[in-house]
Image (tube, rainbow, N blue to C red; front, side, top):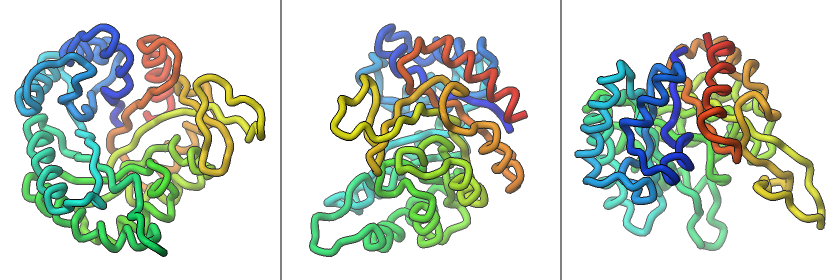
Length: 287
């Protein structure tokens, strides 16, 4: 496996310093990462000026300067939007940005909501979304880019639901961005879920969470969030939490996955030391 890092991991650092992507690439290279995965480039909170295509060219040039690859581009999407044809077209234009970046993988969401209709289920959502997602992956295939959806967002986060979505889309160019940590948010055993997901893997995120039991009526500790089943979770430095990182990566290897694994950090700890510590874990487990 090649070890990368998501620009999302630098979120607080980018917000605080407004340092720009060239500095992020430099820092990632100095830690030892082989690539940087970018997310929604035109984020005004990061203070990076310019249109998305211009930013993409600058980010690619920065990566080349430091001998780094850009393995993936990650964007938000909602294929249950009120204007799904417009959403398909918008997401296809994001594929064009991935092409500018030189990314071979493009990750988009499915949806974070269900339609407010009587009896509308997550299965109905899959039936409605699948042909739209297929249109995106067919376009991406023509651009030499594989597409995928990540297990996150509560509704399409459990392994069975994501698997059903991928199989409903039914296209060889579309697969799974396997986030080994996110299964915790829907109270699933991470390792057992990864064993299901591994056979569909296109890209991997390595993430760790601290998990706590349901506090009942007690106060929720600062920084924690409720899982689907009422437990508590918060992000932390890779290797410090409850996710069996090494075992999950071994399960992916056993299934034949040998692509990129991107560190994704979203804990309260100081960013740069957290990324360096997380890299050391991945270097040991993913090699």
